[in-house]
Image: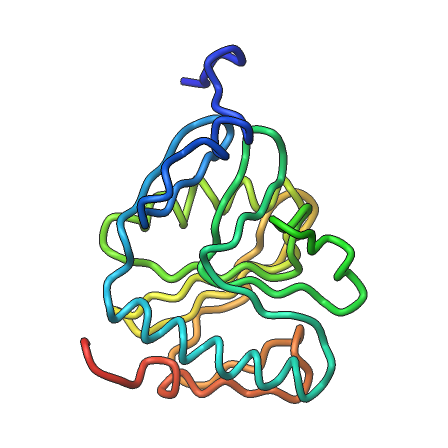
Length: 185
């Protein structure tokens, strides 16, 4: 059931949330809170960030950022994706305190308890607000799902278990064993 407009939380409300180490998001005016991610989540995140950051810096392709960073889509939708990419030509959306507009790529790493939010609620909003590409990483299943925006919806392009060569990053092959390596599995 949709939330009545007068009861939806806004960016102003968000700015007044406590700075207590938890991740807060507002999606279509509805409040979501998540505790700090598990260590496995963080290891997978840093492994993938390292690969993508090395590529973007070497190729002067843009910027990789990671949570916590606010992405403000509207007054009632503010999220903190695990990882995001903004192409060099679109760096004007990087503001002092937030990203003001849709990143070219958002990556969410599924953790116990957040799959429904990432797979359905946020995915739908990311498409509506024009995020070009969306990846879901499942470190328990050791998979990467790639979705590409087609109109106002994401189309799944594949589920990868070994190597992934994303068109968004020409000449890059991500060996999934590299992002899933490390302790905590």
